[in-house]
Image 1 (cartoon, protein in one colour):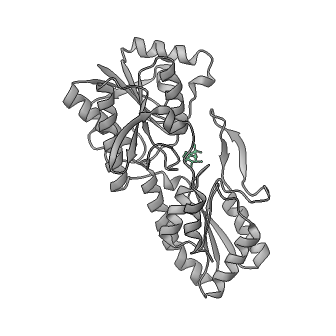
Image 2 (cartoon, rainbow, N blue to C red; image 1 turned 90 degrees about the vertical axis):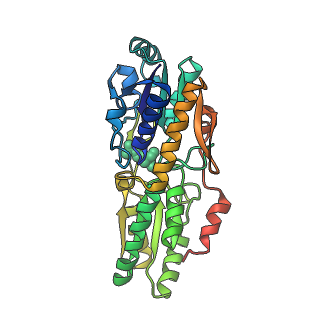
Length: 342
Ligand code: F6P
């Protein structure tokens, strides 16, 4: 059996741990061979491969990024893309594929499975917004990085009596902002699921200064004001899946707060720092287990499935359950954090 492996979408700490687990177990337990596909769906689409065997995966467990490269290539946006993939898999002698990715990469996997491609999915995203799994790997690392930044920003904000706005990733879901905000003791957390009122945010800023401490505001890149205003800046560029590149809300928010309250306000954009570098122990553990279970699913011929963490167990669920709709922060989960605002 020859198994193809690919990593697609935004990179994420733990991708290499998944690849390593797939190859180590597949080679040792089942005697499988592997083909590494380069840069997400671009690999099978254009037939771009790299060697993938036990020697290639030595030493990669703690490494960030992905040894296979990634991209946001969408084969369904390319004419004849599906036929091209099928013919490349056939000519390379690839019997099954393991796709490691988020909403978009696994969305493609879902459709390809319906079209007869033997594929198993592993969920990844630092945003933690995939349904059907309690957590995706990469999220814990991102939250820890954001928490450490918040911890550090508290002391400098207090020394200068400034407002510090921390912009974190999270296009549709505010999980990183909420978890890092709670863990780091933020005074306001703004997430895409709960449009914010800038007047109320300014009131919370004033309240915080009354306690002789300085406010830290954590904002997801995809957060929006209630009046539907224009605080999220986008470059206007979209990727192959139609997503607009986000960013800039931190700066806009900081200048609006400074304008309205007269308090000096600065923004810190954590950006790709949240995605880079070595994964936490939790993410290595989760990624490794996802990899072990994914190759087992291939061995069982259980295609069209995605690995999911349910409690402490890894379960197989239909791909569509993970990609059909996003997992968003519920109002009551957000409300829990509000007691610390101001
Ligand atoms: O999907 C993960 C993510 O990190 C989002 O939080 C963010 O909006 C997006 O990727 C950024 O992607 P890129 O690095 O390709 O601009």
